[in-house]
Amino acid sequence: METMRISDDQQLREIKEKFVEKFPHLRLEFFSEAHGLGEASTYKTKYDDELLLKDIRSIHNEGDLSIDGQTLTGDFESGFKSLFGVNVQVLRKAGNMWIQTTTTDRWTLDQQEKESKEKGLYK
Image 1: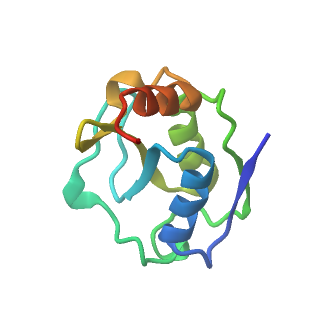
Image 2: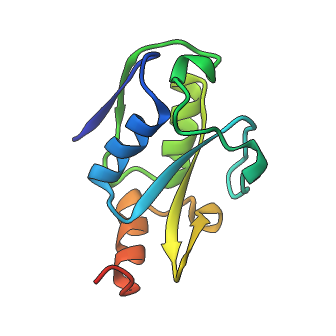
């Protein structure tokens, strides 16, 4: 099982890059407002990639976060919030757009990756 090291001194960009190493057809975004299972995040609340994690989070734990492909998307997002105090949303490429995975929060991260890759958008 692969993990991402999460600490205050990381830029959001660094965390996103680590996520994309494991899931190259997905994207991770950080938001100031929380969202529930099956709900979208408002893009006007999206954080800039250059911010440091310590500047946006309410829980300042350091640790490792599992990025196992069998993790449900919604569980990954809620785990990030509960462990590190940060609101995240997984996005998947659909056509020429990135969509929030709101209706597929019960899919595994591997299923999200496969769906995006199989659409033939990454040749």
